[in-house]
Image 1: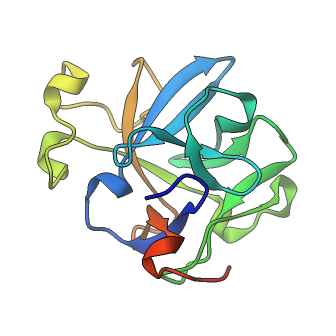
Image 2: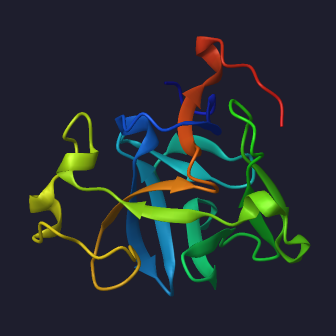
Length: 168
């Protein structure tokens, strides 16, 4: 994975580190969104590519509850936008107007435990609780999650340099 050529796309669930994200709270309801692999990068606005983690505003995201279990992912750099993804596999994530209510802009956040992580990158010790609650945005300092709009396609970190040239 290379800085600036690694992006998010929809892909079937496989539970590898590039489909698992660590959310690190940065204050005022914003989080840095860092994949378990590659761990030194963070999702960056406006291109939705992975860049070396700096903690800048362009790498901070808010998870705004839309309804029970669904969130919009909003960049701190432009709160009129939110992330969206097509329901088709192998399509790239994109930004849309928050008010558009695009069907692919509502995401479920699924907590990850050791049993759910094929590579055991995340385990119960991470939480200090073998049965963490479903809601990942309450009561913990760092959260490990998978993100999906429909239970079929999950946000997946991919590299353009490895032949994954896809459109929106």
